[in-house]
Image (cartoon, rainbow, N blue to C red):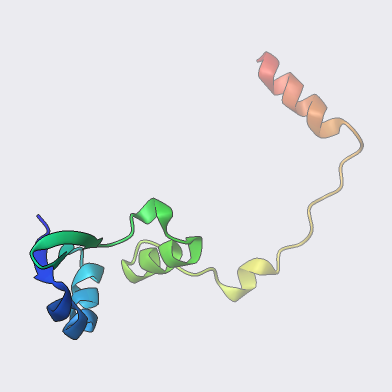
Amino acid sequence: MAQKIGVREAKARFSRLLAEVKSGAEWIITERGVPVAKLGPIPAEERPLEARLAYLEQQGLLEKPRPDARNLPPPLPLPGGLAQQWLEEDRRR
């Protein structure tokens, strides 16, 4: 349930409110007792990819790739159409 806060108090405590929002809190900002805005976390699916990856790293669910993981050899070249042939054979099974 979102908590209510007046616009003046919200302005004075904005940094603190943001810290709470980062933890999942939601706030309804009122002006003269009338709700005018909602302050809350951005849903995960709307966050930029970099922010989602950083969050997963912080939670210990994802590790950054090792530097040597990018030094892989290039893929082997295949004669024209061979990959398509293998795919078609696999689909027939």
